[in-house]
Length: 398
Image 1: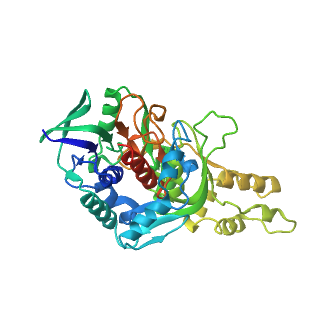
Image 2 (image 1 turned 90 degrees about the vertical axis):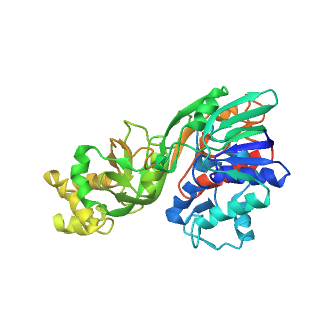
Image 3 (image 1 turned 180 degrees about the horizontal axis):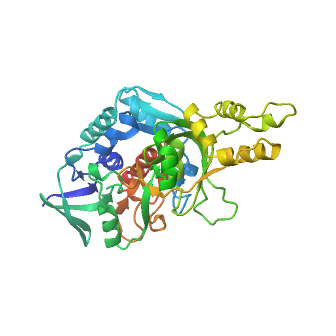
């Protein structure tokens, strides 16, 4: 049985990054994955272009039981350092919006970069390998696989979350964490479309494909004093089952079953209040024309039609319509689940990890990085940056 310095479980973004970071430091590293090839989830990210970081990534762009936990790792490996790595490989990229960086060609460029770095660092990659059991004996971890037993002084769990099971997502990382005495913050789908109730589906879902800019707000998931409800101003999309688009995916990470999502359908604008001016014409067509300045035509017509029974043209009625437009409360029936979720919220409790190294506080030389940890980023490259930063933190420590 050959002994390695480091065994890394999971050949995704975090696993590959950690492997070559450790390999650069002279460590003998074996990277194992049950899938047929490394980086499968990377290839579908960012619409196939891999939104590989966000220039503005900071701890305030992440949620978890400890919102400050990500600070140390992010400071140790910044978005600018990831950009430098991409530029080192001569790969072209662009900023799409709000600091989001995408490859010009394909997410395949990112997988190739990681594979090349692993090769240069002497990392052994073995895919198509099932993990059967893991145990620690004295100074080594023993990992029994479908191809034999591997041995190493350090073990890094980079197995990801439960999102997108068709790409092989499993709960292995959480099972191993619990085996070694760690607690798991309950997992849930995040960055996921929301599903309408039957009533709302009947009212809206024939308008699938309609979109508009909104501010989406949900009650904060925290009881801390002075905590503000999270709010995101981006596009919302009507689907055949409910709501999606960047604003909805963002707010879904904070939404809780049984609570409403509040949508401002005309952020920063007054639509009906100008009609309260003296001698201004007021009828249904005037209201519809005003509403079309904020919403697509069919959506504007539907929004007004659903209020037809109580439609009035007094100042008080117009003021009520204005409030309703900015405070449309939707009570989702649920979400689309892990099948459609981009990431998994919850995970290994960060109180049990060293924020500087991602090493377990319970088991020496055991590390957890990436999505398996209770650190979940916003949409727009933040989860990739957490993968890089947490991986580097562990790779420099193993």
